[in-house]
Length: 199
Image 1 (cartoon, rainbow, N blue to C red):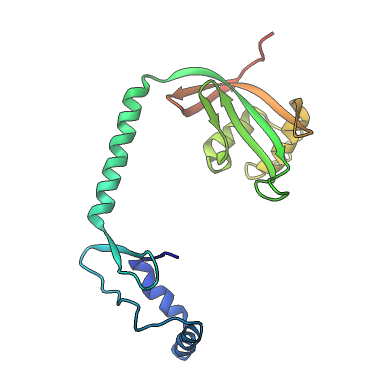
Image 2 (image 1 turned 30 degrees about the vertical axis):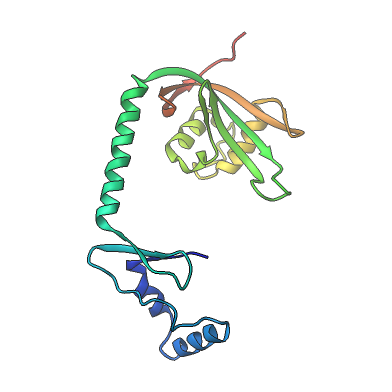
C-alpha cells in the first residue's frame, strides 16, 4: 500500500481530530498493529509540495515545486508540438450517438451515454464534463416541449433517443444524428451546425 501526502493538507487532517480524540486514534492504530517507532518522521525539505511512500515504513520521497513546473512546461511543449503537427483545423462530419449502457456486471458504467463519433474521433466517455460541447449539442437538438434546462443532460439524452432513433444497441433503442464540427487533429474545437444523413 502506498501513501501520498500534500503539504497543504497535513495540518487540515490533524485539525479534524480533536485534542482529546488524537490519543484514542493513535491507541487504536497501535492495537491494529501499526508500529509508530518504525514510521520515518516526515520532515519537509525546502520547496517540497508533496511526499509519498511505497509502504508505511518506507522512506519518504518528495516532489518539489521545480518538478511541478518542469512537468507543466513539458506538457505545454507537448501540446504545442501536437497542435503544430495536427495542421490547420478542418470541417468534418461527426454524429451524436446517444445510447443506454446496461453496465458491466449490472452496475459499472450503467446509464445514458453520449459520444461524438467520426473518422479518427471517438469522444464521449467524459463528454458530460465538457459543458460547452454539451450546451451546443442541446442547443442544436432542442426538445420540442422546452422542458429541459442546460443542466438536465440525462433527461435530454432520453428525449434525443426517442426523437432521433436509429437502430438498437444492447437491445435498447439508440439515437444518432449528424453534425458538422471543426476538428484540430483529434480534438473537437467546436460543433458548427446540424447535418443531414447521406441519401
